[in-house]
Length: 566
Image (cartoon, rainbow, N blue to C red; front, side, top):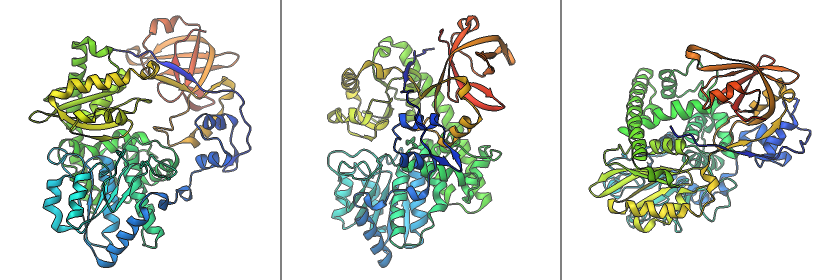
């Protein structure tokens, strides 16, 4: 097994500011203020908004380019009862976006939706599909897609259709000639937050419609917005933090019958509250599974289902599809790792471009994320889509913009799209070696340190600073996720006593650590260098919630162990 030696990034620990900020009558500790300062949340107003998020903090939706035009088009469509088609995507973000817009607009005008099939239709607007459906709609609204579909939009406009694009993927230099392109990543955007998910952009469209006087009950849909945002790995800051925070609050007791049954089938009913982890690794994958190996319409039908018995049947089907997906994924990952082991030259590269004609197109993206996680290299996994055509997905690491890199390969690609951390593409088989060459040439210009995994330390603390109040206030920073990880605290130079193995097969470790005061430390994970650890007399601890738990006055504060001798 390959273990990447991690580098440490120690953020500024000096000048703990004792700013007088109170939340629910309790003064915020300076250590929490410092964590936020180090993450770019520095002004008093920003700190208060972060620690006490409110739906009132959502940005004005009309700051999004073309939002006024989109609202005017939909308002006119409602007035004239024009037929609307919502064109979505087959992943969790696309499914939740489609459900969100369809569920609201169908109350005011004739509305249908279309979810493309990953294998037959591909990603984005499909011209053949549009030709089949063109007599059934007057207005097309895309969700989580459409930013790159110039030719398809041109065709629709020539046919007299009105087109609204709502999307969050990186646009290319020229936008499609739609009637409205609502995308916070537009180059000319003045919107304060660019990292909304597709479902977030769809929510902002509804937000704008509500602000214009259309009677919409948006708070009822925050659970679905949270699922799409978290599952699409969007940073949980700014508006996403607000949407996720309030969405997770209502998700546990959701009124959506389909979601309720999915939560039951997934074994989450007994939990007091649901966290981003539950969405990222349990709920999201089940909604995603149908689109990956069969038909994503199954996931939409679950969210729309009102009958509990039918909803339970669909939820069980999605659970079964997810198990199939896991089996296919594990096989793909093993085969990808086999290619790396077989060809040692791959390990010397900054970017892995791997292909196998038998890989399942629906899982190459998540398999790529596992390869990237294991080797800490951006990776692309490609499989045979049609004769002579490879299709695949890629995942990246912090600091390497995969979408921008692929823009440099545009001449040898048939199609590509995505954003900084994830992308999809297709290309002729004969061009795969050229793709590998160009990407690795680009990577050579990056500093070698970004290809080393990092442990970012928010603050250096002494053990006596970790008390009940600090631990409680750490939870004010939730929900944790991409862009807002759990805070990491470094605790130096602790004396170790009474180190011993515990548990079935001696898999875990227990010891006392401290200086004048001793703390009971339990490690619930195998370490890479057990012999060195056993012989250590002093160590450094850093706190997060990964592997080791430090009990302080009956409360659990998480810590991770690194075997650094002092």
